[in-house]
Image (cartoon, rainbow, N blue to C red; front, side):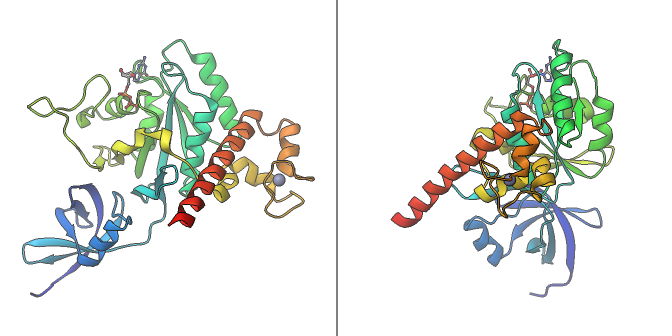
Amino acid sequence: MSREEVIHGTVRETGGGIYSVTLDGGEVVDASLRGRLKREARTGSRVVIGDRVTVARVGDAWTIDSVEERSTELVRRGRGRAAKVLAANLDRVFVVVSVREPRASTQLVDRLLALVESGGMHPLLVLNKLDLDAEAEAEALAALYRSVGYDVVQTSAESGAGIDALTELVCDGTSAFIGPSGVGKSSLLNTIAPDLDLRTGALSRKTGTGRHTTVGSRLLTLSCGGHVADTPGFGDVGLWSILPDEISHCFPEFEDVADACRFRGCAHVKEPGCAVLEAIEAGEIPQSRYESYLVLREEAREAGERLSLIHISE
Ligand code: GDP
Ligand code: ZN
């Protein structure tokens, strides 16, 4: 068997061991994993949407031969379980919450923002359902998150408010929307790109027999040229956690002042001369951000202890 050509492409869809790859020339092909990659996939290192790969044609079939190093990873970690990469090389992640029905807590927002930061990305915050008589609450949340350095878009998939601003961002590069279910992620995408016909809470995609189809992850291509990741696991935020030593790095406004802490590796809890604690005391960092930091830190510490227990018993 002779292998003729090695070609680069981007993984657009995964599921059932078949990978849909858009070649750099524009052609879309279905490929399977080469032996070594298949073994790696079994040990947890998966090929995911957004991965840059090299493919080769062997006769009529295509195989993925290698995966290039990722610039970013959107990672989900189960409590005490291995990390699972959901998408690679994203240009932008929108953390979507709603101001009403359900009403977002700052702790949930902070958790999602930190999770995206932990994958090497700087998220944008989308506050949806502005139409539910929630302008004042949305404005207060927006002001809080702008003050710590995040871009905030206020939207309503219902009234169309903020959709132009969101569309402009989504039409450039590759994006993902993450957030709890029911906040309007699919509705926002459907408003931006009606031709996509995504699954929304009101209308789930079903097979002819009335059963839900199981879909893998996809990168959707918008007619304006942008790409959006559609991954079932994005909604499942209850299970997400971050590694203990990563947490303070996931609060950019802490990082901005942490160089001035007296001790290297300061945990910003009760150390003397802690610049983060001083900034909170002075009202320069919102109290709610610090409370979330402590909660995430405690969770990570407990998860870490459980992990080392598992290690010892093995
Ligand atoms: P997802 O789970 O985050 O994808 O949320 P969906 O897009 O499925 O929306 C969940 C529910 O919220 C649906 O009943 C939508 O019609 C509703 N919804 C979505 N966006 C808005 C909005 O901006 N305003 C209002 N009032 N309802 C919305
Ligand atoms: Zn400190």
